[in-house]
Length: 424
Image (tube, rainbow, N blue to C red; front, side, top):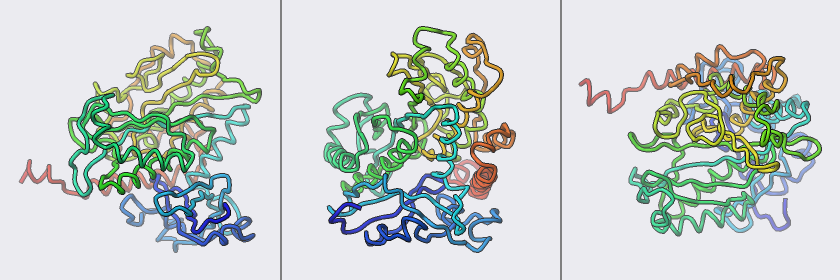
């Protein structure tokens, strides 16, 4: 912890991608016990839904299992300023462990670490950047804060104070915020960040959402990361730009720039496309997620793959030996960045180790339909390739399935205003 730190927050991401934790005095984080064992928290926080209701269908974790202790060990490499609190406040992200010292198998940060380790067995590391869209509404309302002209300076001028605060927060937190622009719906903003390696990319993504929310709050606005907050308007995505780098520091996609039959390209793309149906439950984790996925809004409804076409779920940007990358366009702004990157890396890994390499023309023709509801995504996840359990963790996969089934049950139990207006 930097000298002069007055307060510190020790945080971790929950299953829904929200940061949880507590404020502690900095000396607590610097103690030998914190560094080697961790500070106590509870597994209940990995077994609640987005409105903090305990998921009672989980039998080995959370409220039905006694809400057992977990230990949160600070990752000192993740220390950053927390500028919205005060000038001497810092935050640090941590990794969850069981009380016996083993890694918590259902912790999103731990799941990503596990997946990145598998990828490293292929001699590769992933670089990624999440490209978020979000809506700015007036505080306490659904009134958009800007007009809806794409790539126009006028909407940005309407929220100039928010943008200045957001930039200052992002700079203080070293988030690499590089671009802010308006998109084609009232209040819709897109932000781009510099690529980061592996776990850092997910850390940046979850902290960027937090910084946006806090900057908005300061200016009586609300930053909303729902995938589809307004019917019949453009939704909010979280496009993931990513590339793979070998141990020599070379971009593994460099060969695909001039060779349409490049094997690495075919393997990587095939793995991601093949597992898109099952992984949609991670990329699109809520009931609302699927309302964004409609034809005509560059929100992919099929598992298409190809070069520089925004209608594809997986878009290839083959721009040169160092800048070539893929863009996964399926995830919504409500995704959990850790689980999204883990699902993406696991899918690519399976493509790299598969014995069959599809020919390029077969890959380019692939355009299979993807799940169009959380219910159909859950069904696809139940039919997932068993090898995904080996990479993501079998216990995590069981746990995550329970949490999505809980979302379905909560939705089925609710009665909406739309139903009352239509059927009463």
